[in-house]
Length: 63
Image 1 (spheres, rainbow, N blue to C red):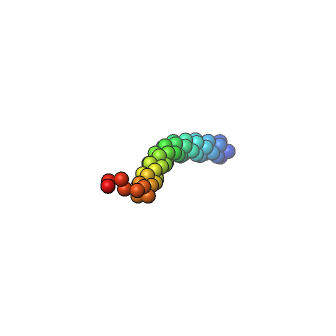
Image 2: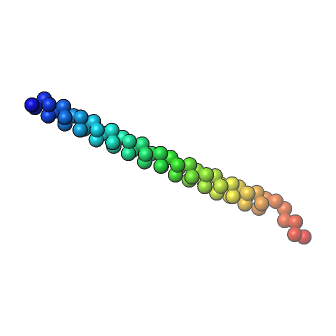
């Protein structure tokens, strides 16, 4: 009987591990999406800073 208990215990551990791996995969997918969003925002901010810097370099045409 102890061998059967060991097999059942090992199967439970495998099922728990599989569930944990699935959950980690879902979390990583969500994090990947958030990272892409942050990357897009950062690119927009960098572009705004570059445009502002170049506007300073342009001669003022108000006169």
